[in-house]
Image (cartoon, rainbow, N blue to C red; front, side, top):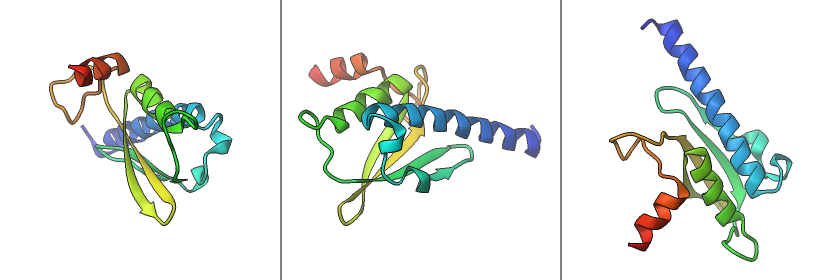
Length: 121
């Protein structure tokens, strides 16, 4: 595989991840235009592409259900979501693409139903 082919594949993987992340965030925030700092996201391409987005803290699971929406939409899109501290009153959402079927825990991602079943055991 030559360098041009590899670079093209990496760009394609990042574009696919960007589409998935946009769907996840649009669901969680009721439209991509409501996502704070979306325009300042950091995109990393390469063998393991990722996207980082800073958001305001205070996401929760029920009354303001952004956290629940993020989790469900990430499982539906087969994307690993990591939430990290990003500064005063800020969180960093880090998204990594995954696949449904793979032996490696670092590559696979369960459906929400599979995750619920595993956790409730």
